[in-house]
Length: 230
Length: 342
Image: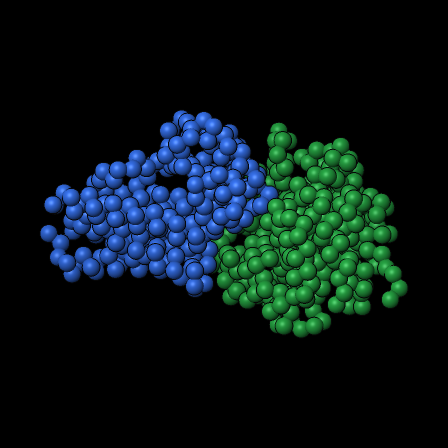
C-alpha cells in the first residue's frame, strides 16, 4: 500500500514533469506510480492533467507560448502511454467517442491536436482524421463509428466556411450528434450561424474548454465513486 | 493639393510625402468572386495560368477602385520552387487556396537541406514574373502593383512540420537559425525577381511569428536577424506583415528595416502609433472576413473610420480578402476612405 506521502511526491513529480516539459521524468514517475500501486486514474488526473491545467494558465499569462505547450503535451503523452493501459474503466454514463479533424484546404493541426490530447486523457475513443480532410469524410466517419461528437478545426478564415457544409450534412443525416468547432477565425457568432453546439476560439480556449469538459468528467467520476462507497 | 491617381498616392505615401488621404490597398490576395465572375474564371485554375491570374489580380481595382493589383494569391510559390508539391484542389467547388501537399523535411535529421540552383526558373516563379508584367501593362499606370513573399519562419513552416519547427526553435535554435538563413536566401532571390519584373512594393508575410504562437523573445533572437537580412536586399518599398497579437513586437518589427509595418485587427493601432511615432508607416487593420465579408456596410464604415482615426498610414486588411466579399461592402469601404479628411 502506497503511503500518502509517497503518493503526494509522485503526483508533484508528474505535475512538474508536464509543466517543465520533461518527457523522461514523466515516464519514470508514471512507471513508479504503477510500481508502488497507485491508481492509474489518480496519476493521470491529479498528476499529468493537473500539470496541464497549470500550463494552460501559463499560456494564458503569456509565460508559455505554443512551442512550450507542444513540449508539455509530449511530456503528458509520455506518461499517459504508460498509465493508460492500467486505467480501470469507469462507467461515466457517456459513451465517449469523437471524430476530429482539420477541414479541407487547411493544413494546420496544432490546435486540433491539443483538443485531441484532452479527449485522449479523458479516455474517449478518438477517430483522428488528420488535416486537410475532405468534407464528406467527416460525415462518413461519424456514420461509420456512430460517434457522439464531431470536432471540426480550421485555422484560416479561408477554410472556415467549409465547416458549415459539414455541419449541415451531419445534421441532415444524424440530428443527435454534437458538433464542436474551433480555430483562430471561429467566433461564437460563427458557431451560432453555422449551427454548431460549441466552439473553442483558439489553443487557449480549446484547452480551457477541454479542461472544463475533463473537470466535469472528473466530477462524474467522483459521483460514481461516492455512490459505490455509499 | 493636386489630384493624384491611386499609384501616385501609394508611392508618395511610401516616400513619406504628403497625400490627400490614406491609400486603400493591400499587400495580399484580394481577388473577389465578383471579379472572377466578370472574367468567367474558376478560382482553382486561376492559380496556374499567368493570363488568368493577371486578369483576376486587376479586377478588384477595375470593379471597385481598390488601389492596387497584387499577385500571387497563395502562399506556396517559394516552397514549390524548392521542390514541394502543391494541391490546388481542382476537384473542389469551394474557394480553397493551394496548400503544400508534400514537405521537404520530415524530422530533425533532415534539417540539412540543399537549396536547388536556378531557383527563379523553378515552379511558378517564372509564371509570377509573367503575371506581374501583364498586370503592370494592364493597370500599372493607375494602380500600385504589389507582390508578396513569405518570411523565413513562415516559409520554414511550409517545408517542414510546424509542430517540429516550433519545438526545435526552442530545443535546437542553432539548427533552426541555419535553416532560416537558407530560407532568407530563397526569399531574397524570389523578391529580387519580382522587383526586376516591376513591382512597386513587396510585402513579407511572417504570420508564423505572431505572439499568439511564439514569444517576443524568440521572435527577436531567432527571427528578426533574418528579416533584417531580407529587408536589406529589397530595394522597392517593403512591408513586414505579422498577424495576431503584435503589440509587444511592433518596435522590433519597425527595427527590421521594412519601410512599413502591417498588423491585423488584434493590434491596438492607436498604441502602436504612439510607440512608433508620427512618421512610421503603419498599415492596417480591418478584419477582412468578419467585417468586410460578414459585416454590414455600416459596420464596414465604422471600422474603416476607426482604423484611420487610430492613425493607420494606409487602410489595409489584416489578411487576404476573402473572395465572397459583398460588392456593397467594398463600395462602403472605398467611399469611407475617400471622404475622410484628417
